[in-house]
Image 1: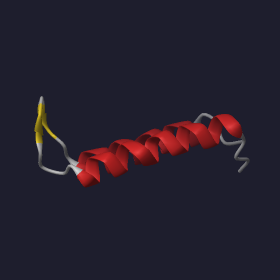
Image 2: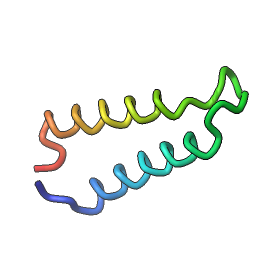
Image 3: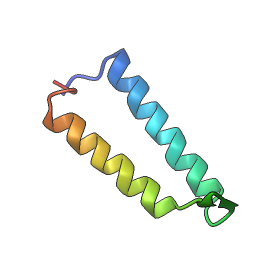
Length: 56
Protein backbone atom coordinates (compact mmCIF):
# COMPACT_ATOMS: atom_id res chain seq x y z
CA UNK A 1 0.00 0.00 0.00
CA UNK A 2 1.39 3.39 -1.03
CA UNK A 3 0.11 6.56 0.62
CA UNK A 4 0.96 9.62 -1.47
CA UNK A 5 -0.50 13.13 -1.46
CA UNK A 6 -3.79 12.24 -3.19
CA UNK A 7 -4.39 9.26 -0.92
CA UNK A 8 -3.44 11.20 2.21
CA UNK A 9 -5.73 14.07 1.26
CA UNK A 10 -8.71 11.77 0.73
CA UNK A 11 -8.06 9.95 4.02
CA UNK A 12 -7.67 13.25 5.92
CA UNK A 13 -10.94 14.59 4.51
CA UNK A 14 -12.77 11.38 5.46
CA UNK A 15 -11.26 11.61 8.96
CA UNK A 16 -12.52 15.20 9.30
CA UNK A 17 -16.04 14.22 8.21
CA UNK A 18 -16.13 11.44 10.80
CA UNK A 19 -14.78 13.78 13.51
CA UNK A 20 -17.37 16.46 12.71
CA UNK A 21 -20.14 13.87 12.85
CA UNK A 22 -18.75 12.57 16.16
CA UNK A 23 -18.69 16.04 17.73
CA UNK A 24 -22.23 16.86 16.55
CA UNK A 25 -23.77 13.40 16.85
CA UNK A 26 -27.56 13.67 17.18
CA UNK A 27 -27.84 17.43 16.51
CA UNK A 28 -30.43 18.48 13.93
CA UNK A 29 -29.65 19.59 10.40
CA UNK A 30 -31.52 18.27 7.32
CA UNK A 31 -32.07 15.09 9.28
CA UNK A 32 -29.40 14.76 11.95
CA UNK A 33 -25.69 14.13 12.33
CA UNK A 34 -25.07 10.40 12.59
CA UNK A 35 -21.67 9.08 13.64
CA UNK A 36 -22.49 5.48 12.74
CA UNK A 37 -23.55 6.34 9.22
CA UNK A 38 -20.44 8.50 8.72
CA UNK A 39 -18.16 5.66 9.85
CA UNK A 40 -19.89 3.09 7.64
CA UNK A 41 -19.75 5.48 4.68
CA UNK A 42 -16.04 6.18 5.19
CA UNK A 43 -15.26 2.47 5.54
CA UNK A 44 -17.20 1.68 2.37
CA UNK A 45 -15.43 4.44 0.46
CA UNK A 46 -12.00 3.25 1.63
CA UNK A 47 -12.88 -0.34 0.67
CA UNK A 48 -13.99 0.71 -2.82
CA UNK A 49 -10.89 2.88 -3.33
CA UNK A 50 -8.67 0.02 -2.19
CA UNK A 51 -10.50 -2.42 -4.47
CA UNK A 52 -9.99 -0.25 -7.57
CA UNK A 53 -6.27 0.20 -6.81
CA UNK A 54 -6.20 3.78 -5.52
CA UNK A 55 -3.73 2.84 -2.77
CA UNK A 56 -1.42 0.75 -4.98
